[in-house]
Image (cartoon, rainbow, N blue to C red; front, side, top):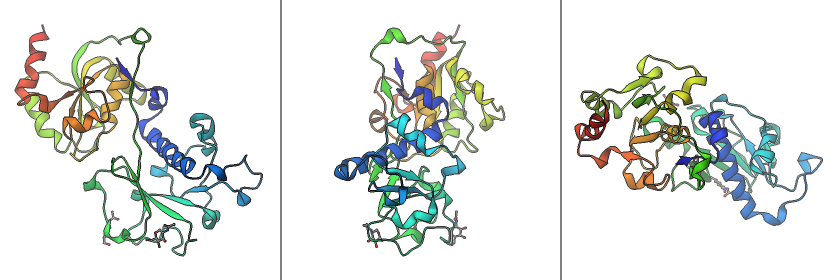
Length: 292
Ligand SMILES: *[C@@H]1O[C@H](CO)[C@@H](O)[C@H](O)[C@H]1NC(C)=O
Ligand SMILES: *[C@@H]1O[C@H](CO)[C@@H](O)[C@H](O)[C@H]1NC(C)=O
């Protein structure tokens, strides 16, 4: 059975985890590049010989204690800070794309020290990533879910070796879809077609049936299969809609980039791809035979 080694953290909120994972990736980059510069924690941050990574915006306003990165992720070779007053000492400045104002007035000072790298951090798919041309020649590194980013950040999924540790949750529904998306996007047509052929239990704001946060995972867990449909299709754009069923003991049925792309992220027998079937009717067929 599949699970995530970070499952407990995922439950605290996959989005927040993605940000934390971002730091981990970034820091591991510094670790590999600057091993000899690392010394025990300095008393005065300003005299630090460790590279300083400045978080310019808190993504989506989700704040957490940066000192948690040490015990949680074993990050100790860098100084993480959100203190903008030391921007001139920062080797890396992490800038969350969505928070940048269109007139660029909330970016760090343009006259940066020669060693400073600006890192463009984006978690959104291309249609939701706007005003890129105004950012030409500002950034040194990219950080996103894409494999071709300088720093790729993803929620990692691992399969568990010891099956006996896993108890399959009790199931009382065959196929569900839990989504809080405002817009189901490209997935809507396939869903509309599929529901002509079989019952789909839907939950979440997308369907006008909001769930309390504490019921989110248990609802997914109560289903055998979960429709993990992305609302737009782009390379590597594989979101928590796939990871959340996996950590809940539910098989995701994915719609998004090609199967091969998913297989880079999760084991090939851990999901069903809509492209495995010629159409929605054919996908529904095996389920229809199982439903009494
Ligand atoms: C993108 O830039 C245009 C023109 O500068 C501006 O009107 C618009 O608000 C910007 N959009 C975003 C999301 O910042
Ligand atoms: C970062 O990019 C800017 C803009 O292209 C450039 O002027 C600067 O030299 C680069 N800094 C580093 C450390 O590569």
